[in-house]
Length: 304
Image (cartoon, rainbow, N blue to C red; front, side, top):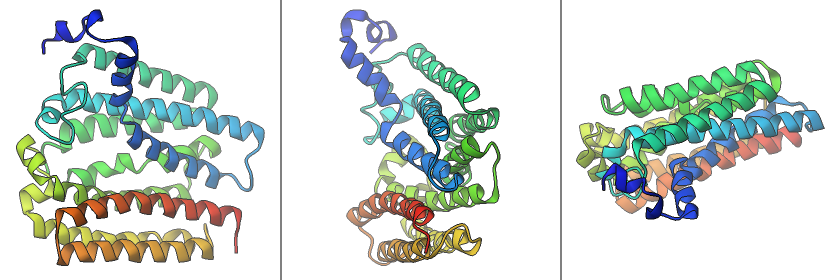
């Protein structure tokens, strides 16, 4: 489809066009990002937030959502050709040529600018700059530089994806303290086994797209072993909030149970691989992170 046809006003109704732009923001991914940021916000505040703190948190959520959506849209723009060769992403509006590069770029820029304005006006400058750095880390450093060049792309690039709790903490405290970096570290360690589980059963997609994901460059068995090793490292990393006395026994028990559960999935994946088990491991990894952070939140308000 040519750019002129794709942008024709008669080609698509307004609701359908809105849906296409909405899809570019990768809503499910952004929801997880905002969820992790909210956890950082709530943990940064002793006790229940005041009305003023709640309004600040709301503004921060909106700003972070907009910038994260902008980064996702920019990612779709840069990876338009790659997405078109992968079954998992071929349906995206950019991959199908339903949105032009100009439309996508303007949409991404508009969301980013609006989000930054909200953060600088109603939150604080530190959160704005950290959020901008996260945008650059994901949209430029990861998408443009790391992803097409190295099988360690998701490990190095995971630093930007681990930032949401830090953004949330900075929004409420106006500073970045050790507790925030512990939350960041947990997501950083969680990202490789989470993403490599997906890459294992989507390996043909990545090979066809020419991306050097670990299962493509080093094979299935090597990747499965690294998924298992990372779950052990992740389990150790999740104990830091308890060791640092940021959290109590509710979180410790939850972290141990969830961590060993994740290790069990990874061990089964290592010993008895199947695409279905890899898919289950990937889905569990998402549930794992949400439950782990939810346990931090429960522990924060119901200390034992």
